[in-house]
Length: 124
Ligand SMILES: [Zn+2]
Ligand SMILES: [Zn+2]
Ligand SMILES: [Zn+2]
Image (cartoon, rainbow, N blue to C red; front, side, top):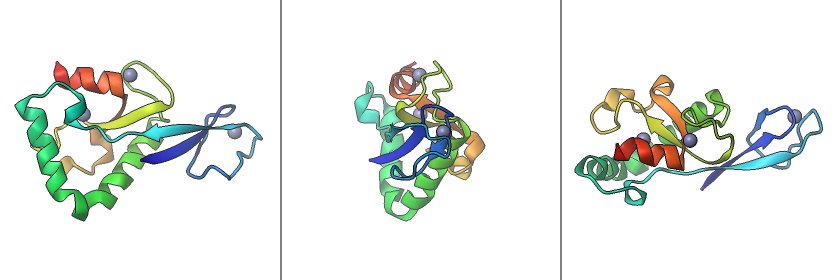
């Protein structure tokens, strides 16, 4: 599971924990959670999304990881739906992964969501 760190004082993002923030603020841990359909109510749509992602995982995991980090960084580790900062966050594809392969690693197609909002969105 990937982690990032965020200064509680100036809200700057830090990729490594031992690097102290230049403002002297305390770094808090943010857990980047991969969103899996299993955690949500099962629907055909979600299953196929997970299936397809799984198949391509090895080849594209680095690209996916970079995409997520870029999305989280742009959104300042804040849920774009409810405004939750930090905690457990995941990156949502606005244009679905399975149906829009060309948008898989486009940062503007990503949205930072907390797990609760992410599940709600896929269950709706
Ligand atoms: Zn700081
Ligand atoms: Zn949220
Ligand atoms: Zn999603």
